[in-house]
Length: 122
Image (tube, rainbow, N blue to C red; front, side, top):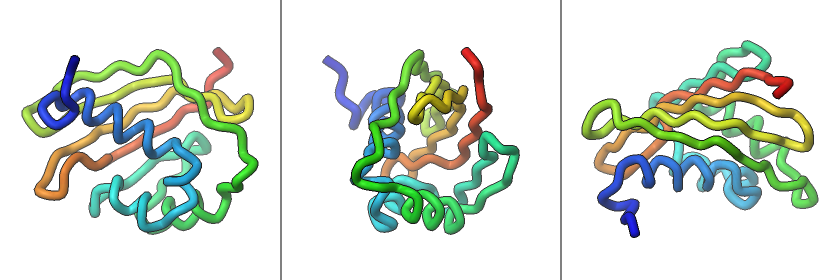
């Protein structure tokens, strides 16, 4: 069994999955705990998002009755001792995207530093 406190890839995967959880997505505080202060995103639409913009948008658009976002093909690579790159395919109510995230560890733990999504017709 791996320990996410000592296995960087498992720690990043655990964080990535938490970010897809409806409870986290509906809470600005919980989202902020998982997004690096320097977080940026290039969304599936091509839009560039800052940390504060993505938190506000996700919290505003998340509804209790939303179906869960599912993930497949999650893989991770350790790029440096405190940097992990994750890729996966997400399905958000039929809207599928290939996703790429860079996670980095700081004194506050593992946080996503960068994310990009690209719509996919898989």
